[in-house]
Structure formats: structure tokens, C-alpha cells
Image 1: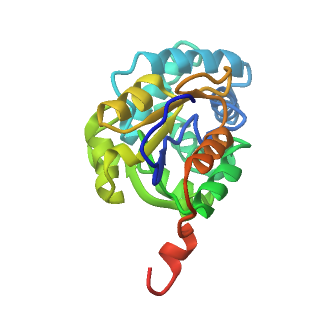
Image 2 (image 1 turned 180 degrees about the vertical axis):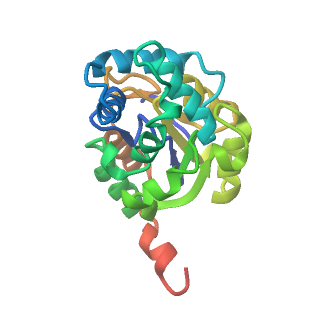
Length: 243
């Protein structure tokens, strides 16, 4: 991270692939749901691969239940006699709303704790549906968040500058002082940059280089080292009587 920016006063995060990931995997959860309906022959690895293929062909992230229904039907097409939308889709949809279907990456809590303790405001900018807010509440991530922007509520998805501008409006800060971090080069890095925000591309599977980092704790250490003086902590700012 050789790039130097003006003082960063807030950090926004993507969610899927950045803060949390399906557990144990999308394919495993799909196979488990199908198994409960008597389809015990399905390989989770094959379902994972089919999901990635279907996802890569979407023009936009699913925002409504009906859109997810189409995605799941396409993943299982030709593998089982009936369409999931006619059998176990409802159970599967509810599965991904539950915290048990997700895990936090190990670097998430240390980074959020350190950034909020240092007084930076934190936000979420995510392409997701209406299951996200309650999910993050169950995972206790909402307690860190000063700004929450999700595509199903704004009507715009990353990389549209509109969704980033809404986050800046909620934070009440200029774009140059809000760093965005996410695992998608197009949706997160390019989208935030187009909105005038500094951005870093998170790649946990690759070594760090300029504007690409391998962990959230690395980002945290850099931001703290760049700051000139401590600020009020997140708790002091939002929970004190005069905050």
C-alpha cells in the first residue's frame, strides 16, 4: 500500500467475501437441502461450480426472493427431477438468512475492534437482499456500523456511484476521506474509485501490493499508523450522552 491519501476518517466494507462467507460452502448447503428431500447423490463441489457459473452470467445481483428462486433452479437444472422452486427452495432461502450458514473471516473482528477503537466511523455497502440487516444483527456486526447501505433498499447496485454516494451522505463525509474495502475489483474497487473514494482490493489468496491487500488487519495497521492523533472512539461518539 504505497499510495498516500488525505486523512481517512471512515471506512466502508463490502460484506460477502469481505466480512463473511457461506459455511461450509454454497454447494454444501445446497446439497444438504436437496438431501433432506431425498436427493442424496449430489456432490457439493459440483453444485459450487454450477453456482459460480450461474452467478458469473447474472447481469445484476439478485435483490428479490423470486430472483434467487431463478438462480437456485438454474444451479439444479438437470440434476434432480423437480425444480427447487417447487419443492425445497423456501427452506434453502431461509437457511441463508440464518447465522449458522455464515462464518466471519478470522481477520474481521480484530480489524473492526481496532478501527472503531481508533475512532473511525465504519459502514457497510453491499449488494444484498432484505436478509442482510437481520443477518448482521445476529452476527453482532451491526454494532460497529454507523452507515448501512444495501442495494435492495437503494435501488442501485455496486459498481453504480449512486450506492457509494448514499453511504457518503449517511456518513456526512467527503469522498476523499472515506476508504472502501471489498473483494470485487469491479464492484468495490472500481465502483468506489468512480465515486471519488480511495479504495483497496482485498485478495486473501494473493500477496499484497499497491492498492491490493491480503487481510483487513493489514489495512487497520496502515490506517492507524498514518493518523496523526487519536480520535474519539466509536463508543464515545455514538453512546455518550452528548454524542
